[in-house]
Length: 263
Image 1 (tube, one colour):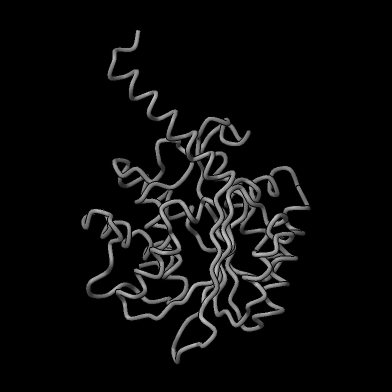
Image 2: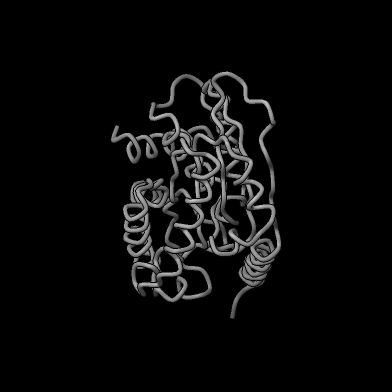
């Protein structure tokens, strides 16, 4: 029989997971950049869901950039559980894309869609991605578009039917690579950074108690990877840690540099 402490811990984790599911189902985050673009400013579009807005990975991205003297302004639409197909139909998501003038776009699909595209040959996943990138390019012709490779996870749904975190990650890697290559876009290798970090420092929890969404540290690692994809330059000087312990943040930055820049 579980003792009282173990029982309470189980209850807390279950409640947390329920709250996260609620966030995934209902939360929406919409923002447009200012109408006037400053000299040297980099405009970034973020389209995604809770795998971006939990712990505000997009906000971390700007904070990290600010600490490096890089002026990033973000336009975004993030909605819990959204696929690219749902984004294509949402008025605010279209507004964020149609604002235009973006230099970089990070597109993040529903957490297992690219894996289903790889394993199940789900053509709709790619068609929605293609339509979304075409919309981005229509309003931002010079934009560099990145499809985010997210991370494998366990959670309460048998890793979305892929059995294990590792198996899901394998198909996510394959699916994002195939989709991006077919659409002549790029991959932001966030999932690859997660794999490296977990292998070297399993004591750092990159996922939250639901074993699904990113922890604070996981969000920071994602932000670091995306920052490096924007600048293609290593970090220098004082770098914003965004609430992550400084030693941990330093390790995660090094992982992201090795993943993106090969350093």
